[in-house]
Structures are given as C-alpha cells and as structure tokens.
Amino acid sequence: MRRNAIILCCAAIGMMACFVGRKFIAFITPPDWPEPKYDFAKNPMTAEGIELGRVLFYDPILSADNTISCASCHS
Image (cartoon, rainbow, N blue to C red; front, side):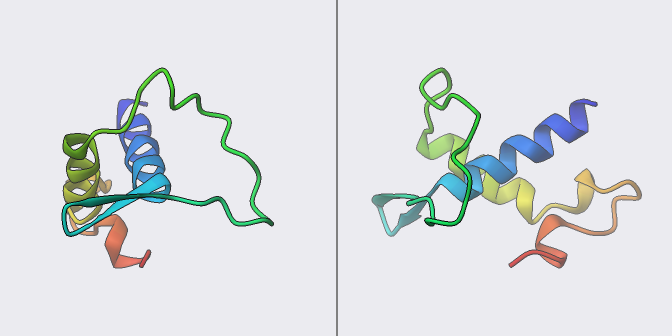
C-alpha cells in the first residue's frame, strides 16, 4: 500500500510541474484530460519534491523485484 502511494505521488509530481534550468514551469492540463482530484494546495510542490520524484522515477527499487524503473516503460 505504501509503495503504491509513493508511486502515485511521484507520478503526480512528475505530471504537474517541471523545471527548465532553474526556472519553474507549471504543467498546463491538456483540454481532453480530466481535472486532477488531488488538492495540491494542501501539499504544495517544491523543488525538493520534484527532484525526489525524478530520482524515484528512474529508481528500480519501487518495482516488485527491484529490476525495472517507471522510466523503463514511461517516457
């Protein structure tokens, strides 16, 4: 359960914002996407949180057998 929460959190962070150099760029929801149900005001994004999401996205430790990262399938 905790692992799923971590994966979901990392995915949300990765989808909602990115940094280009040191400049923050907010994610614009595409017109055909549903609005997020998660209240980001209760847990605002930070540079540290986005960096953690990026690190975990490429780390295979979140897989069941520690051999494949999220980045292996998702670009």
